[in-house]
Amino acid sequence: MNLGHAAGVKVYLAMGITDMRKSINGLSILVADQLDLDLFSGHLFAFCNRQRSIVKILYWDRNGFCLWHKRLERDRFQWPKSPEDVLDISSRELNWLIDGLSIYQEKAHKQASYSTML
Image 1 (cartoon, one colour):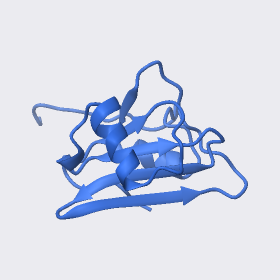
Image 2 (tube, helix red, strand yellow):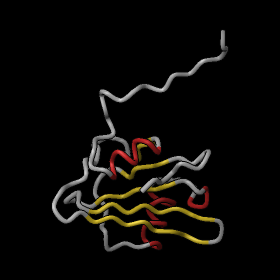
Image 3 (cartoon, rainbow, N blue to C red):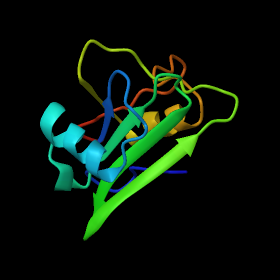
Image 4 (cartoon, rainbow, N blue to C red):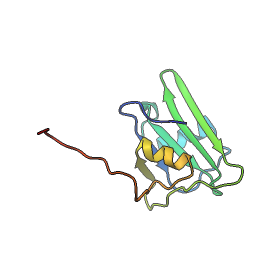
């Protein structure tokens, strides 16, 4: 599943534990009130449960909310730990996370930025 590849789309991970009984309305309240982020931006807001077996991703798509949900039957997501309330990651890191990898891939190629070409 490739999420977040549209230009300008950011990915926000809600740190800590989220009650996965929450659906669109409950998660929307968390984004707006606790994370203080714009629900209607089109950005992706990801949440994980205590057992790290469920990830839900909420986003606004033109005229309504979408909720993507993945439940692992055996394994666990490598949900990062951070003292922050929210962690801004790349779509590439989100795909790593969904695939069971850490977002902190030490051997991944770093992004190169150049201002001129010789």
